[in-house]
Length: 525
Image (tube, rainbow, N blue to C red):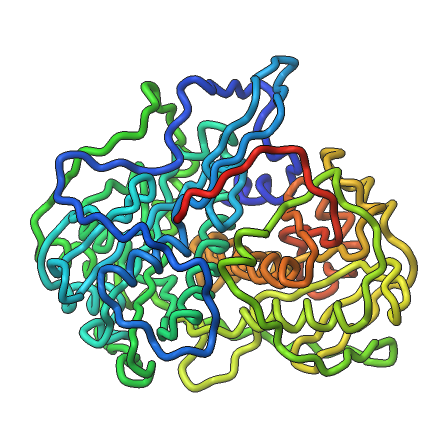
């Protein structure tokens, strides 16, 4: 199968569970977290603050604060047990899962967090965040400012940052269940987690930048991970200083062997780790996609210029001016819930829709290395929505213009039956949902500029917007359910997206809901 055919099938096939003959060996499932063995460990404080609000001075980046930061981003936060599940006519028994503050496809959490740390109460070096034990594991000790500067193409002065977070994907962690569909889920899960990281960063008063283009093999070499099993998807420096003091415009240096040359500066390290699975199946398409997406020289780094969407505003609905939502992030994360059959149709107001859309799309404007310096680039993501029974807004399909803060009507009417027919599973009753949102982006994932790496970047940016939507919905007392099991062709036709070369990436019904039967306990003090 060609890579283009593979990516097209990921988008067009609405069966999230993989091919029909795919057998999941539940008894040999991998752990949802990586466990390193026989390495120095640094326990993190278990006295986690149970309130996190914005508008405070930057927190002192010591080991205690770093532990709190990482826990809010990706720590184990609660244990949930659901009633007995069924799969392939087989009763599996009660489902028990360790959950985190971010959603993940199947609760499998394919990402791992690494951090290059420079603080006074821990050795300078590269660590893995052991979520299972809430501790840091030292992988490589030493100062790697120059190494990371070069890996990022001299676009950031790492010496001005107290930490650099590296977000990786372990391919097997959700391939074992979803087969090749895992590739799409891994990009979305990574984006969701980055969205959470950026929100926590703002709450702690730090500055951050997201680098999606870097010398992959050099960064993986620093961590001591194998490209065949795991690969870094994003590098995110953190600083308590103003961004202008550590952001650089980049270097004019190019070299086809930059990654190879950089790897020679550090010795090879391989660390023993435990995944639990006794038999790890091959995932050739995932490794081929990862190989095709890698960048070997800084001359391959690109900027993406989006064309501004222009259309008539005769059918527009103007949104009222609303204040930015204020909330306690810890509380919101604890209360976040993904409804399925438990949506309950209640009226939503014009102002509530305005607040939700405004809050969610504010996440689209973050510092990243895809936008050209000193230019106001258009976002690569858009929000479309089908509204029903919203007070003050006629039923219809709309595009949200975040710059003008208005809804542009694409088609009038109630479109719930069409959306319901497009669902591959009947786990959500869309007739009980007032807001059904769709994240939309380019059909070609900017391949002409970014190559195959553009696909995973597109999924990551979609995931970031999804997380912002879920947080905003929860803050307003509602719930959202991210869905990939829907017919994209139906949505694209509904919104007339083919005319502009766009497509629907993910569907998020949002509304009020009941609570699903479950037992749940928190894992924090």
